[in-house]
Figure 1 (tube, rainbow, N blue to C red):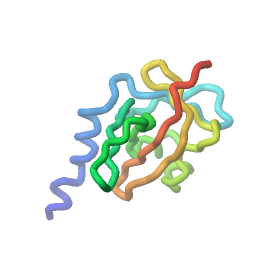
Figure 2 (cartoon, helix red, strand yellow):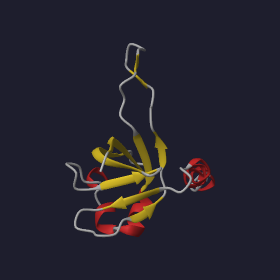
Figure 3 (cartoon, one colour):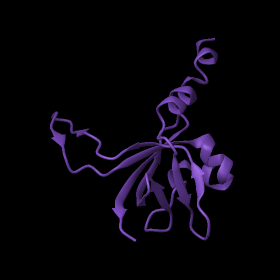
Figure 4 (cartoon, helix red, strand yellow):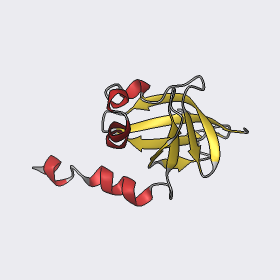
Length: 121
């Protein structure tokens, strides 16, 4: 019962706090990028186990797995490799181009992506 009550809450929260304008996702082998919504944090505060804040954190973006599935269902089938690294996929957020460092799924329908950049063209 409770799970049904909150089933759509993560999507509502994401839609409320997402990046205005979203991102453009250029996949390997594609010519034109696809628009996709994201939650972008340019300078995240990462706290280690001892409570120290690291200041050299990479930018991060969070995506809904359902949004990825609308663009590329094959990629959404394996959340751990939905975004390809080694400069095979690119994300343009706020007019700046970023390469993908790593991509992890959290098991709740979210994909967390660590980014490299911004990269000058």
